[in-house]
Image (cartoon, rainbow, N blue to C red; front, top):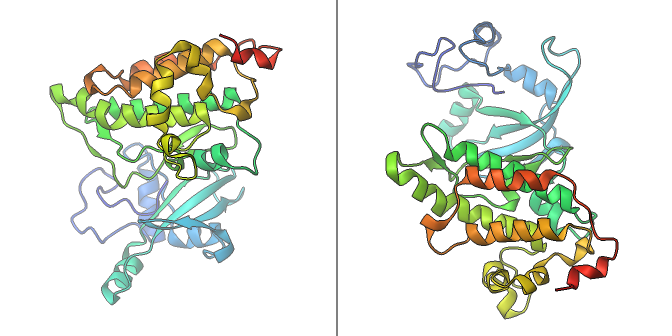
Length: 309
């Protein structure tokens, strides 16, 4: 959902004047009528002020390079075609110059996203306040994030997502993972070089995140002893030996995980982190490998047995 698509008119033809955007009711209504050509839902700026209660400061969720993000609610009676929904409204702040301010007034660069109620994987995984994420949720997150990356890699024109990390994976109320912050994403190469590029940038990054989910450790943690500060440097030697594999498991799981499932996920992380990019699996193969791990498995009753050989 958005307020002002810049690249196309409702008919699909390029807009000649980039600054002529559908920010008034008449233009927005024209955009709505042509939903077959443009499935996005457009809102007037007045509607957004209503949704966010005039961009109240206590609705501010955060900000970044694009601008500020506000929490909003699409009320039951605001749109007939929409169910009541919590949303995140991303507002481009522009620059502080007069020209920047005028562009903001003219264009209303605003995007509306589904509100991700549980925040980032980073906050959920490393928080000492929240309860530890159970094994099943960790695998659900890994599976969802992998499907997102596979979608980008398998696009007709592949997209290289260069900022894949736990802080950019957001979770809805049911822990469904969504990728965010595409500021560093770029179009990938076409043809034979596609798989190499996505393996270099995407698959390795996924391996790091999967390792974080398995260990409960950050990719870089300077509060740990010197040899344990870099997660991959610490974990890779342990991943090579099956009898040492369980030494990397997050102790906060307290043995409440399937050993075989953990071993499969750990080996998958190991292959994603292969020093030879061409030897790393494709994201679609990673999705296939993670799918069986979504099924519940028997968890040992004696939690101490996870330390057995």
